[in-house]
Structure formats: C-alpha cells, structure tokens
Image (cartoon, rainbow, N blue to C red; front, side, top):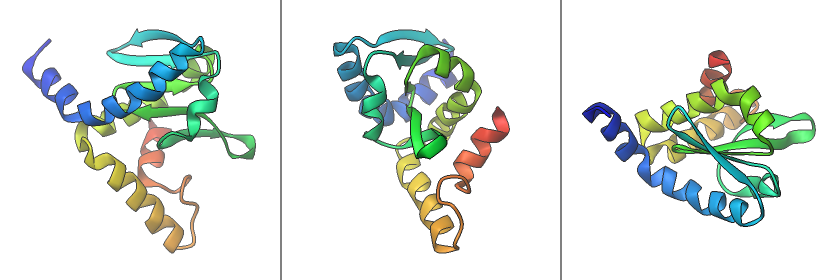
Length: 135
C-alpha cells in the first residue's frame, strides 16, 4: 500500500467509523461481509433495515433505499444488489476519499440547494449525479 492510499483511507476514516456501527449491527443479525477493492461490503440478513442510518445512495421504486455508503463501508440489501450497484457505490467511496468527513455536510448542502431550487434533492444532488455517471 502506497502512502497516497494510506492518506485516502485516513482522510475518509471518520466516515468509515460511522459506517462500522450499522455494519456490525447488521452482522449481528446475520449479514455477511466481503472486501472488494478495499471497500467493506456488508449485505444480507436484516441489513436492509439499517438503511435509515446515514446517507443513502441508491433508491428503488417507492423511495426504498437499497444501499448506503459511509467512507469505505457499503451496506446493502444483498450482495447481488451490491454487485449491481458497485460502480455507483464505489464512486461514493471516492467522494469520501476526496471530501473526508466534510462529505456529510457537502452532500446535505447539495440536497438542500436542489430542494431550495425546486428540484429533487436526491436525483439532482451533484454527488448522486456523479455516481450515476460512473455506472
């Protein structure tokens, strides 16, 4: 691992720590873990119920969230869903690597700005547009 990799992980670490709590809880309820490209992916069991914790990055019909990214932790309904959404979710990981803990405020600020302008706070959020472009 190069120094630049270590710095990216360190810069995103506060957000990763936030993600470890619901990830551990999901594991306690039977979720499984895998590491893909340096990202901890947690899925299965009742982990989909943990979507209410933090920023969600992917919605399906009816506004139901199926995956959430916190730093280098992605929590999803199933590993099949995470396989399908990997490019999107890993773009959020790169966003955390750029913004660090400031990402939480930047994401919320982008959503608030979209709402204020009469647009969809999720779909028009600049970070979500970037993630969709990475798909």
